[in-house]
Image: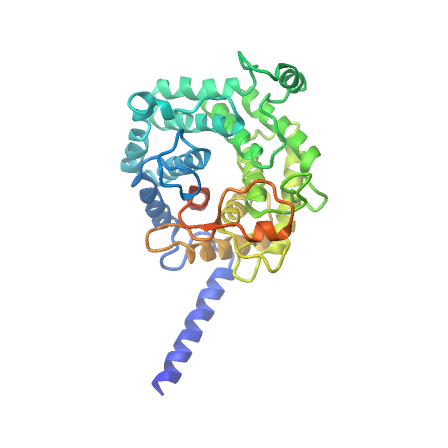
Length: 376
């Protein structure tokens, strides 16, 4: 009798959990998945350690890595939306050593993955009013469109600049999160439309060059695979850009249309648990959480801003957020994060990639999601 009652209770609890996950409510969440609580736990996990290296490597890094920047930026945005002054102070204090004892770790705007660093001081400026952060960050944004003083690739870079593109153009799928983020922050901090306008134009050129007819993106021309995190960078990059792009920008309708096309395809590939596979279109692929979190952020942002039909996409976002929380362990680390991945030549290559726990590629978009859910 007791076993029967326990079975009934478990069934009812599971049914209730599933029903809540499938509703379109992006405000009220089951216990343990409230975005304010999750964001605080993951933020505190982030500030609990010094700067980290790539892929779980234990040795100290040689620089502030771009996953670090993305997590730092995410934690700053979360501190702002949650009005957490203590967290903001912790995140600001993290910057001080880069001006002194750890100045060797300070990035230089000499590569697209390095230039995104400027989004951190710009966000610090907008929250603290300290103009020192503004000048550091705006220099990174400006130099993304200025010819380097010394380079062996002057002709190639000048060709990009003559076309209105950043000299850091590579046509890699992560570029358009990195570029959109730093240029959007520069626009918000300076109110000068040149930053956001050039990022928007850059996005249209990338869309023309690398987006596939179904709205997704191959890892590279020579790697026709829809790698989850690679597509996540593009999804989050378009969402981040559209969120800040003035409505009168001439490139906005094009970017919005391609964003919506991508979201429609992602909707079709969401798996039973509510997330996406390491290879988005392959049903036998393992669930990869960093790309899934980036997709979730992009969908939440689309629903909140009215770019996506809330009746269709809000349940998708809710189910994904709740599912992501099942992958956060007791240490507040996200599991099943694909390690850094270069271009591969087979499906097996991608499915065999190492899965890391607590990698900042995954911690960062969890913070973006929590922030997006809390924003008005």
